[in-house]
Structure formats: structure tokens, C-alpha cells
Length: 298
Image (cartoon, rainbow, N blue to C red; front, side):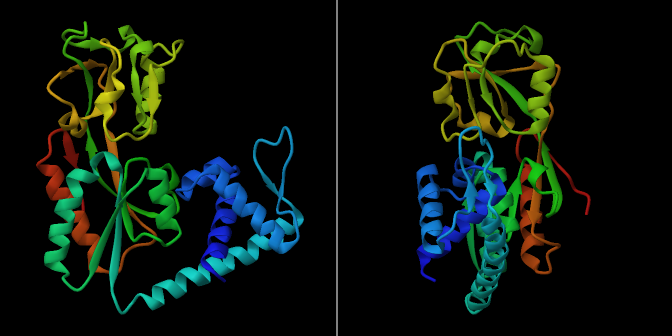
């Protein structure tokens, strides 16, 4: 099979897992038209229809031919991953992932410690969302990852690393003073960052959900740019405060938002020393970072 055929198989399996082309595109770091084209190309090659399509179908379902093909596609995907692992043993490599919001802080520390301890192993680091990291680890494409949302890690090996405080942020000229009461905050001015299910549940309990937020995002490189009106506000992790310019300030918030949990995951209990070293490096780094409460239990 050429590279395109392999991509078609991966796109097909992603749609099987996710149920829609758009969700599969997000999981495979592609686009919805690209996934749709790959599925159509695969169907033309096989001469069968793999998914039921039509109006009113919100989640794609497999045809009988699609169910039969999925069994073979999963077998081939596993065989391909195992072959890649066998062929790469001569040049050892370790893939570590991290959520983007903290990758810039942790990646250099992990890299320096890893290179010093294992000069014969190449460390590759990726930043992805928690859902994407879980998918990559589950499929054997990544060795371990630091995530903040464990809902898709139920079948993976996970170790709690730390919890991070969440803080209220606004522009200096904003009218907010002193301790902020969550129930009094104007949700229409909120820049809603999605960092964990716990925070979202807290928001639904304590904020006025009859209003829509100013904007909602799950991942962003320059969060300060989203505060497009003078009285915009948001709830961010303590580590995020370093990327906000001097024109912003932090204020106490009541009731206190739930802390953001961090987990280090792998596909199965690790048998190599790399996972342990990365865990130790993360714990040491978070001990020195403002707003973090590492979990030291062995």
C-alpha cells in the first residue's frame, strides 16, 4: 500500500470512532473535506459504500460492507504500527506529548533532563489537546503524554501529576475591583476557556448560564488577544498569567474554581526508564511553578 492508502485507512477508522467527518478531521489533524475525499476514494477503490449517508443522519453508521471492512482495517492498522516499531528499534526514539497551554514551559526542562540521562535515545515532543493526545497514545503513536482532561484515558495507564489553581483575569481598566463573586459576573463579557470538565461544571453551577459568553475557546496561543472589549474577563490557569501583558491583572474569585488536574498517561504500565524520568522532571518543575500543587505519591 502507498502512503495515501494508509491515510485513507486511518481516516476510515477515525470516522468509525468519532461518528462524523468533522470530528475525525480534528482527531487526525486534517480537514473535513480531506477526510470526506479520502472516504470517497476508499469506497471507489473497494467498489462498495462503507457509511450510510443522508438527511437526518447526525452520526454516520457503517453499512454491512463497512462493518466487514472495519475488522480488516483494524488488523492492518495494528500490523502497520507493529512493523513501524520493529523497524525503528535500531534508532531508538521516544515520543512525549503535552497540552499546549503548558508545553512551552515544560518541554525545555524535559528535553534537557532526557538528553543528559539518555544520550542514545532521541526525544520528540508534540503539543496537542488532551483528546488528541489520548488518541495518539491509545493508537501507539506516542509513548506518553501530559493531559488535563482524563475522560478519554479510561483504557490507558495514568498517573496523577499535579493540580493547578485557576484565577480570574481582566484588563486593568475593567470595572472589576476586589474579590469577585461568580454569581455577579456578566457572562456576556466572559472569554470562556475550556480547560477541564470540572471547571465547566463549576461554571454551570455558579455563573448565570442564561447568557452566552463573549467567546469560547479550547486552545489558543495568545489568549490576551481574545479580550476584545474593555470589561472582558476570564478564568485561566495560574501558569497562563505569565503570557498576559502588563495591561492585565488577577483578582480573587469566590467561590474558588476547581483546580486543573494533570495526568501523565501511557498505553500500558511502562517497562522502560523514560516514563519515570519524565514524571520526576514534571514533578520537580511544578514544585517551582506558581499555583501548582504536585502529587508526590509514588
